[in-house]
Image (cartoon, rainbow, N blue to C red; front, top):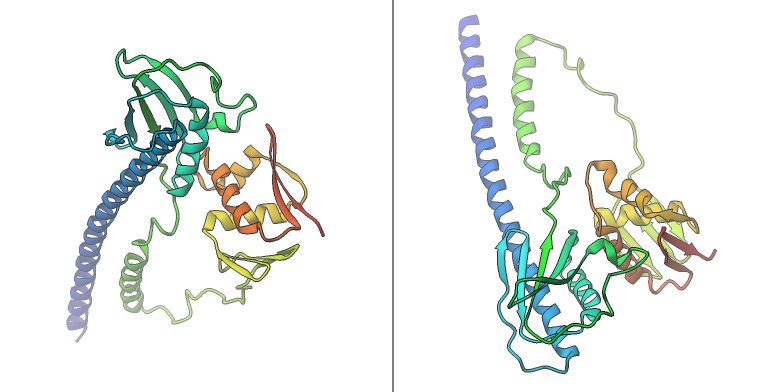
Length: 303
């Protein structure tokens, strides 16, 4: 009977290990397919961003009939569109920023304006110039008539170590736990030898300010009886503001508190997320998120 028991245990262990390997292979194949799909979605959104921006520049010139050429993609992060006439460079930063917000692209980027004929770089700026003290350079400089290529180069995506990216660990962990259970049963350990102490936890965290309530657990903002679903980052940023009401928070402090403490390096995201929070809070007249030029932001709350 003992030999039979050992044989069954070894067979079960081999079967479980085989299943774990098969599942890992399957999940990695699925993860690769998802990554390719996300890359395709990003390219599509970046294409639409440039086309919308080009349309806005032409409209500003009084041109509503010219055909907008197709966007050219030179690599995973670089996109170019040709404009066959000069345009108002001063309107470009705002138009481009609005388009990026519309399609929810939060990566950092560089913008360059290249002469179609000579290939020389005529103008350009970095996304950080939007919030810099001097602003975007060369906005008021004269632009000669001619054909120009508008080139948008995004920073490579950063890998975010979140539960969403590691979703495949749950089933693999379950299988590993099953294997561990078999080993534990075989070793004859008591049922209670590894059980952690169970304690009650507070499953709801809410922050009240002015006429608004932030439900951190459920990622929800209630602003004057109007509900808004928040992303994880939006909730984390708003919670930071709520904990530091009427205080100036430096930009670097915000970045480190909301993003970099988890090993994620961003630049433009803070401006985009503040813009989203402002829209959600616009019905609460007692709350206002103000930009402190060259420093950061302050959420003003009238109690």
